[in-house]
Length: 406
Ligand code: FES
Ligand SMILES: [Fe+2]
Image 1 (cartoon, helix red, strand yellow):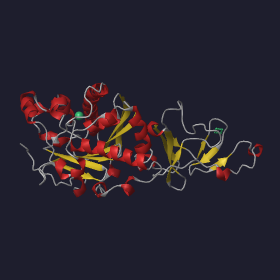
Image 2: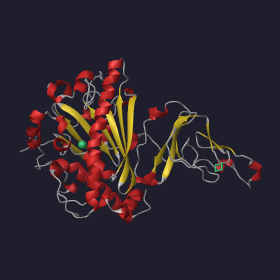
Image 3: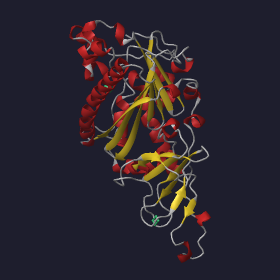
Image 4: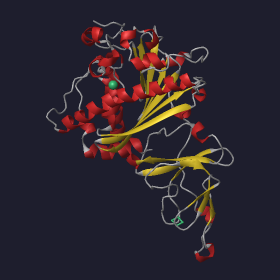
């Protein structure tokens, strides 16, 4: 018996008939052949979010990003005129990796006026122009103007998203500059992990600490239901509802939550962000708590009613591994207790993410047995899981038909 009203079609899934209601295959998470085509069809063709513009706020600042699935490393820089640019991280002379510090495979960030290659000393401006060639006269008809860095398409996220996401325009992302970032190498396909963050059907079972011992049994038998789902092109979202954790009975809380006035759903001392933007709660959910926007292919933005947000990025590193990035953003702390509250929220977030990670390594292993092949049934609360796999499958099919199209 549904707690929240369903669309007129009878379910959220049937509201989006192109997604279908049949059983699904997880071959796309275990097949090395699928992984190889997925990297061409999806990760070399889709827009990928690598950071926030305020990470390179000043002219001359830069960071590098390793994108193993696209077999490249990129440099994102703000040039001396303030323009944000991106380049493949490769020297035009003889292919050395241009920007790195102690370890070539490690990402780095900093600021400078020019990038100097560690091999023979060629230099490049932050606009990508080659500005210095060591012993230039030794070369044969070499014109530096022909040897700038190889550019990568780069623009701010806004320009290629549909109306569901652009309705977030006006959300004060720029005020939330206190950030906490985590990375973990996870032993499962990136979609297996993404799936766990786009359905909450698993929450009563996998994260039982979200209910008190006294109510756990009831919560587990009732299950979890989200009040609103929406799909817009390849992107999707889900909202949850419920009272903020600060008003939950004390026996629902860890002692540290009470001590720091913070926890899994964020600090209890909420910043004043002004009037709420309608786009964060497109379903006009009563007692709205959080909306999770999943931007194709590998980015999620979770916006909380309590005045903060976090993002996840899933970077494939092989058919059955990926690198998980989780970053939490808050308005800057003004007091020591603000800071303690944020750190508690971060630690709680990590604990719950690890509960998913630990389980999903086992999921990957079991899927790879192929003891069950193509008939996994998904419920209405798993609509977004279906949608991600369908979108990836559609992109792969499209690529198979016309591989050159970008
Ligand atoms: S490879 Fe960069 S200067 Fe030679
Ligand atoms: Fe989870």
